[in-house]
Image (cartoon, rainbow, N blue to C red):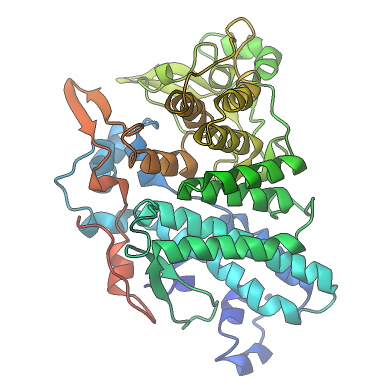
Length: 470
């Protein structure tokens, strides 16, 4: 693996500290204008590094799902973009994987910060034992978040039958620049994530300093997500219910639309409202950026994506608007601000709960939970409570809502991958582009991204085996 810290943006104090075990004598030499972390407040500030530690960059997964509209210029310039966008199974992605290494190195940046905090916070000054324990717990939750992204991007989906024999990604538990690593099995990595969360929960609190700092609700929400991915429905349901004890609020999208109705419906106006999905979003357990960490717009959507939203979906109508620019027609983003694409929200937890209820044969309960979300999304004149006659029908309805609610997130990608393993839910994606038809099979190797070639060639203190053939 490449030296993770030398390939990512880290503050100087962090770079100095990770070499503490082998370069302690150099800590007496502090560069002008820099500071070595010593107090608990110094360490806590590392979590607030949004650019380095609080991003979930999953560009190729979003392109593969074909929800996002991509420009012709990008598709022509980046061969890897084109391969995934057009579902080209004939091209070997490994040699061109270097054009998008961010999804690999960004999570490892956050993991390195978590490891640093776990290793060094016990010796921090000016902090109580309880506050130190809380910061360490938050670092463990963040480490689990990052490993979940890596596991669902660069390794095959979790399947109990083969998770012990298939490789995932390198497991690193030290911030030392020369720390050894082992590419563990999928089973072992999921066990490690759950262990981190279970160790964190006793030391977390109901509230935290900022939305970037995981609290108890966030830990239980992440646990529910991981357990659902593993197919452990009873345990995931229990975790989801625990998360909802700390926050069960849902944002009212029909009301939001009503507030900005005049601007939204004005012809040829494409900046209509501030994003409500930022740091203070009422649904947040934990806020995390997507690919960008600055204020801006969401990605534009393909025109063939819009029909997959329910009729009368106020959330869709509030956020995207049809636009034609030159030869391109797409749904452009009409809200400006920050968007919680990489974090954890009540909506996700409600929908995890709903699926688990359906899987455990409580179909009426599942539909009640699903409709609890939908009533805050669908315009009153379009809203009708949904019902289902069996588990398969219920899960499909739940997944339709979830795919729309969490569009362009690691969650929808992970869901599609796991559902593709079940013949009841496996889906072949189709589209027509410039008169040509394209399909993506649920069994395609494209659903697992290649580990960047640079990491394979420069594995550092360990070895890395590629998880895909091409």
